[in-house]
Length: 134
Image (cartoon, rainbow, N blue to C red; front, side, top):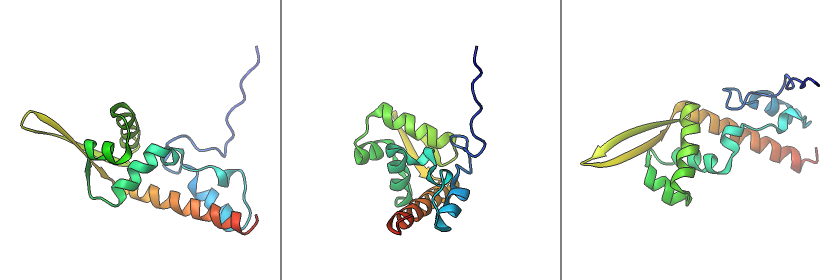
């Protein structure tokens, strides 16, 4: 029975705090694009999660229903993606009741704001490198 090869040491763990952002961006800024520089923060890079984080970056807080309407996402889809961001510490979730009606409100944490800023800087670096013909 063949053994599985270990994952490359340079590849960041999914959802890890570094997410591979630092080394990759440095490689892009240096003018060369390496394999590691192409590895984005997968936690934020997914379309729905990027939309959630972006929406919360420009709003102090949004309810589940506001996010759902804004993103055009289903209950299940939004719930799963919000939970992943919450588990990573990027979102904070506050559940309350207005009478008997549940209300879920999301806010972007400082870690989430930092992760979004790093993600955007990484994307901008990749765009610059691509335009420069690297």
